[in-house]
Image (cartoon, rainbow, N blue to C red):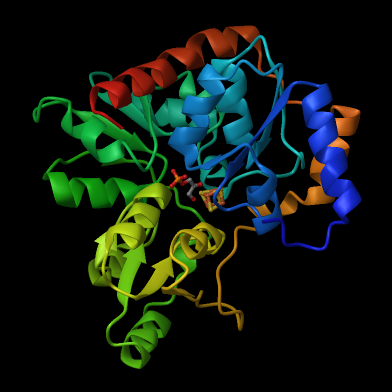
Amino acid sequence: MVNNNFETDGIQAILNLKKKKNAILLAHYYQESAIQDIADFVGDSLALAQWAAKTDADIIVLCGVNFMGETAKILSPQKRVFVPDWDAGCSLADSCPADKFKEFIDKYPDYTVISYVNTTAAVKTLTDVVVTSTNARPIVESFPPETKIIFGPDKNLGNYINSVTGRNMVLWDGACHVHERFSLEKIVELKKAYPDAVVLAHPECKTVILKIADFVGSTSALLNYSIQSPVKTFIVATESGILHEMKEKNPDKIFIPAPPNDSTCACNECHFMKLNTMEKLYNCLKDETPEIFVDEEVIRKAVKPIHRMLELSEKLGL
Ligand code: 13P
Ligand code: SF4
């Protein structure tokens, strides 16, 4: 069902261009609803990387943020990859400049470097294995307990994995500006108003939020939990775009976005993700810009830790 105000003609024009150019539209769960509805595939960052690696389309339009486009390009360098808005960045990736990260890891020469996928391609070249929020914990656990690990750039996800695995990974001090701003007080108030509600939280949230959450998981893990749980009401502490798919899959359940602490708005959006619009998607397919380019040498190095992640994920059944 397509449900925003982009003209029906515009939607048809996107579908026509997509067919004519043999393009595939991959969308993250944080995209606006209309983009999710028109996409060939909607998923979390792991699933988008898996699709980018296997598609036989000539063009990938990655409706998400730039690091997702870069990952698709690194995995499929022979394909042309576009992201509808060039400025769709990521505060977490920005919190970890490659030169500073190199100085940091150089202080720990015998450590294995595990980096979250929310990083630039340059940071991935300094990495032994990439992870996403879906596979971070099992991939960390796949290393022997005595392995010395640096984890970056998300300190909240790193702290969470340390707490549930008993590891002592050295953490880079980065965070996502969206997930860091959930309000504990407002979630507690919502819990009082909806005592039967279950709190779902993404591991990029601060530790205080994760401590009061009933379930912590990646975007797709939260979605699956909402489908499998007999509970009827959920307070969702992640970017509010995921509520679209949660409501589609669970029409009889109630989903309440957890509010941020610094605004009067009830939900918490990633303004980078929301830069992509249906109009920009149409223009991007029509004009074939903005295109993602990654230096060949960077691709050669960055693809190794991403392939390692995909292989480990397959082995782990993810
Ligand atoms: P997922 O790995 O859950 O898709 O999260 C990506 C992201 O950017 C979270 O903010
Ligand atoms: Fe980056 Fe946070 Fe936006 Fe995800 S929600 S893309 S981590 S800024």
